[in-house]
Image 1 (spheres, rainbow, N blue to C red):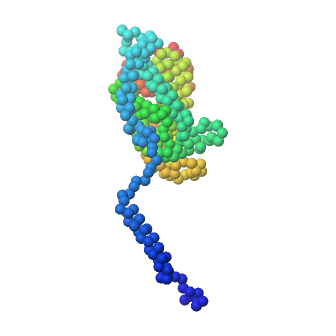
Image 2: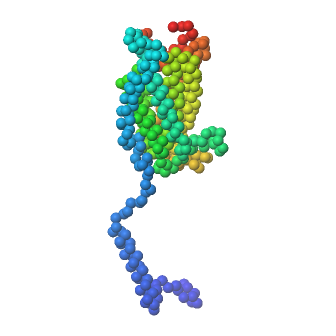
Image 3: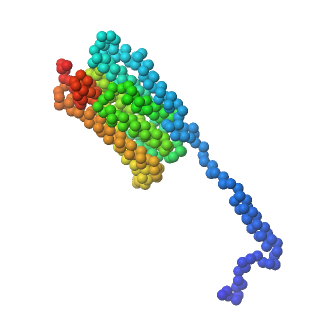
Length: 365
């Protein structure tokens, strides 16, 4: 009960003031009419910021020039083979166009194949450097002020996923060129190139790479995808360069390329790539601590299957590095030698026996 000295509060406007009551009723009626009109109107979609052309659709899957570029690459390879690479191989190896043995013809063919791949990987590497220059996901060089390994790893993923960062024209060209090259390389494995002992692993590698490119495009993770692709190109340049130098008889240059191959392969594919695969899994699971929790995207569900594909690549690279290590062991413990053939090749002359390591001492034939 209220005290006698204090009147009870009034809930409704006083009847003694009809103007106030009328004003209140008009206000309530206006609100009701506005809500009714709003309910009758169709829901307007929330306005989303327009995406730049490079992010409006999955780039690697929808770019109209991708099929044309994938078809053009074999044509370009054939033209270079006929006009430049085959004459160059015959001049360096001293193999005539007529009357050459089958072994010399195979060496010319393998020289041209490795020279084409060396040129292709060098082109991709150049495009990758241009794509990463100034991009928001490119990690700062280690040793730069404020740059650490942790900050470099975070920079690859902290790009405002899913659509806040547009691909630069250089990055778009590189991403499309990577997809077209590996698509054409997969076809060339069956239709063009020499069959080697690791044929199945190579097919799996190209399929995994294409799955990574397509998956990264669908998930709007072109930045991490481009970073992973750029890590692969340097080692392939040294690999094909070592074979070209060996076929041409420049054994000192082949040895230098082989040493660079071993160092680059171990650093990029067996050290950095596993870290990126682990970071992809962390991004797919969400959470984290320290610098990652402060700067990286909190949760990218599509990164988890991409992490599985990256770990598959790590397993294949480990297999190939074991072959490289066998060559290195032969050089260290087998005396002074030289790399003479691709470790994965099969010698058709010697009853198709797989040559795991081929190091010949000076003076041996």
